[in-house]
Amino acid sequence: MLYYFQFKYNIVKIKLLSHSKKVFLILYRINQYSSLLDNNHKSEIFQNIKDKIIDLDEFVFLTGAGISQESGIPTFRGPEGLWRKYDPMILASISGFNKNPKLVWEFYKYRQELICNCTPNHGHRAIAEFQKIKNSSVLTQNIDGLHEKAGTKNIVELHGNILRMQCTECEFQETIEQKIDQPLPPVCKLCKNILRPSVILFGEPLNPDRWTEAERLSSDCDVMFIVGTSLNVGPVNQLPLYAKRNGAILIEVNPEPTAVFNEIMDYSIKGSATEILPQLLQLQKNKY
Image (cartoon, rainbow, N blue to C red; front, top):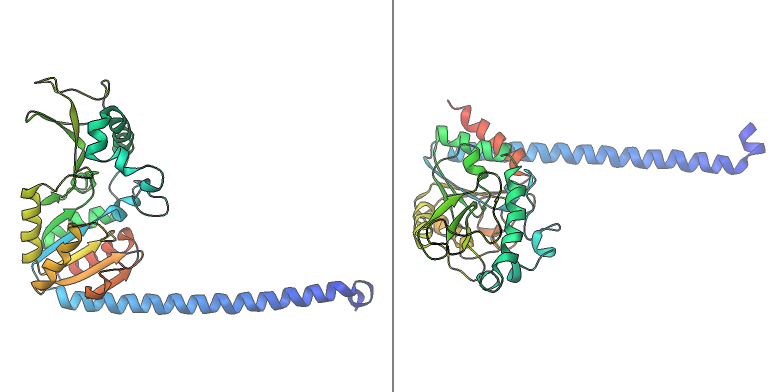
């Protein structure tokens, strides 16, 4: 009663505080229940996936920038994507390179040094482990080389590899170990012409041999995992259609479902590659 007579306004405050606690508790319990439902739903999906794919043989992982984001490599089109800060037509196009190779090389050198300090995450390593129990191939849009660092074999690097460079005139190629320690743009050791990053720049077609291999693997697979890619870029976004025409099971692993191709997915799991792929791997291992 002391508070009531002397500090009546505090009673109101205390009641409001008590009401807020109740609201918070209700919301907390709803969130817990929602999380429980989500976890139960995921468990059902995982078990369903296991039952569907446990006896299938040919797996393909189609990966994009999202799988490497958790290794510290920026994506291109997300909220913090590189293309929100830099103009790709200036810094990542063949016309930009031909016009100002030094400027383009400065951008790629920055990215190379960033990538050299990054390591594969649990998503990359789970894919490498899948290859020990299933015939698995990787079709990646990423140019960071993290699949190879994780020990993965049978990789088709559709957009090239930023840790390699090639001559613009002759057949010379060179791997970048840590950083480029020569003036930009670097020059070929054989013919002294300019080197370029061994990546597909805007305005260039994909390597025809790599694309043919990607089409073949997609058309022949039993299961395709679509991991960390929005499927906004063609022609790579056609590869799930090749798999689907062959009757393959399509399993999407993304923080957000793909907008255009979601309807053709057999399973769409909302989550990161580092969280989901190790769980799917463990389900497969439980058979052996």
